[in-house]
Amino acid sequence: MNTHVFKEKTTRIDLFWIVFAAFLLSFLWFFIRMIFFDPSHVMKVFKSPYLNYSIGFDLQQMLSYPASWLDQGTTPYIGKNNYPPVATLIFAPLIHYNFYKLYFLITNLTLICFLGIAFLFPLSISKIRKVTPVLVLIFITGLTSYGFQFELERGQFNVIAMALCFSAIFLFHRKPKLSWLAYILFTIAIQLKLYPAIYILFFVRDWTDIIANLRRFLCLGIVNGALFFILGWGVFLDFLNSLRGNAIDQMIWVGNLSIRSFTQSWLPKIIFRYFNIPPTQFMKSGANSVEIGLLILVIAMVVVIAVKSIQKRTPGVDPFLLFCCTCAALLIPPVSHDYKLPILVGPAGYLLINLIIKRTKKIGGWMIATGLMFLFSLAYFSTQYSYLQKSPLIANNFPAIFLMMVIS
Image 1 (tube, rainbow, N blue to C red):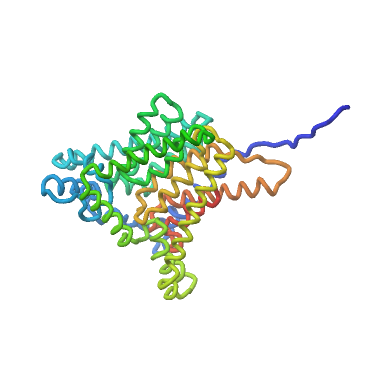
Image 2: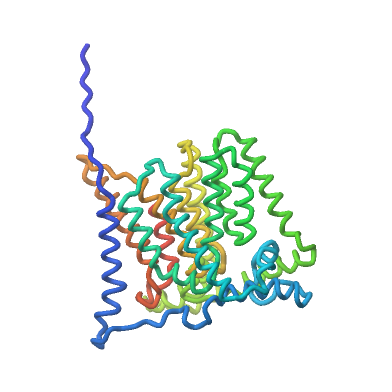
């Protein structure tokens, strides 16, 4: 008996042109329009948010914490210090070093680390293993982005922490014999910034080996928990009080992209005002409820992607899970300023170079996918510009990142 199998002819859509079109639109709207088409007919120069402080302001603050501990004999948890005690030990040898030489070193190290997390990591961890136009576009725009300039100006070390974290993930999956080094790098990343802890989901080689995975998670948890006590019980309590205080009295402003900042300030003051909705009642009872609801949604999206990854038994690093975990790391902490945006560049590039859209005879499916890809890319590129170059409705980056999570 002869059987004839008819296969639907499919062709792949080149995602570069979708991503590139979104970049061009964002460039024209947020840069050309805002700077050259101002109603005054004079080229508009925006005052950047990082012009309000001396360069390396956050680095100066970070050095003041171990200085308080070593030179004054007091707790390192002064001011806005919400870093783990190990961070105090790491920066302690640098407190008497020439500040501008140190800032020079930190800046160059950040540039090298950005190359690692935004270009080398997605290239080396991907199945494709080749430089694509999409990856180059994402890297170059990230290199010149507002968020990365903000990171450099402040002397922050989010990019450095993520370079340690992503290096650990690479070693764990590509160099199993160096897993011990991966655990060390991952632990240092957590002790610098705390939020890299969410990437523990990537220290799994086989989801079916539940015992080995639980043992690994438990050991990493115990080690990191023990390191919180490295400066003693008293300093540990100061650390907890500092975290609690920063969660309550966080800096809420347009450049804080956290869920809490969005619901407590930006949602009632900007969006409600834009749609002429009285915010009074919302401020009294609704803000906390919306915050909890959004927090549950963000966590649920990460869980859904993780479950799908487990079901598919995706080998290596699932690009959807990596991207959603990074979005969660940006949105969940109550203090999450725009200078953290550079950590999104690598996961976004990794996701985009691994996506495939096929053109089939069923027009609706691939057209919807293409539209969602364009919307995703447009939301991503909107985060590359300062809030000063956007309308108040979209100035805060929470909606763009949340939208990307939903689409992915």
